[in-house]
Image (cartoon, rainbow, N blue to C red):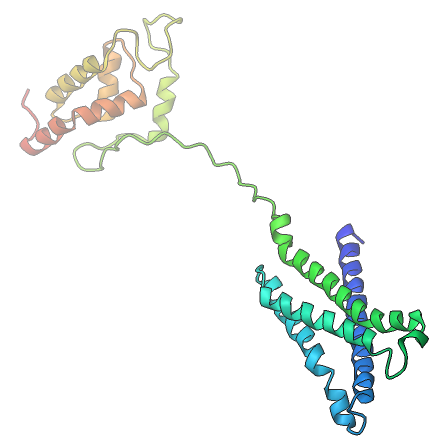
Length: 266
């Protein structure tokens, strides 16, 4: 059994005790007020004698119900508090005052007043404890917020792909794209081993690569990634897949123009 289970069972048992105490105190107070009413003018009518305490205790019931509603709504109802206080104080006062009956106050033992005052007082205190528990239950979500959900780590955002080449003629890949990265691992001839890895030797700018591609386009009437790579390799250079994409994108208008006019002769 967990701590939460023990707390829940304890709270339930306390609630039952509080309800039983409230009902017992209310009944004893009501019955005593009925006896007081019988001693002061209502002895001949049992029905009115038992109905008379309701004119006072009904304020307690109405006020407690309104206070319960206000507690559930997390607001303060001053009218409900006033009704409950008026009914409770009046019930206690009349229960104590009814001890004298028609006799002399000096002959009544003090304990009789205590016995008369305990039931309405116990009912009032029990209701106060019940309202406190209700307020705690209503405010529990605010005092015990749910743990924040653990967010799964987001996958790393891949770099946006460069605008791809449409599969329109005459530009078509002549080999699987998977084979292209393998070309990058081949060390080009005539290049020092200590050269920085960047896909092209130092000094080979994008403009130079574009010029090589333009010359190849003029010679063949079209330009593919394979032709471009071979032409660059012939110059003793290398070109990365990213550079190939940049060159093809730059020369795309010229490639499309060549495709419309037909391959150049010679």
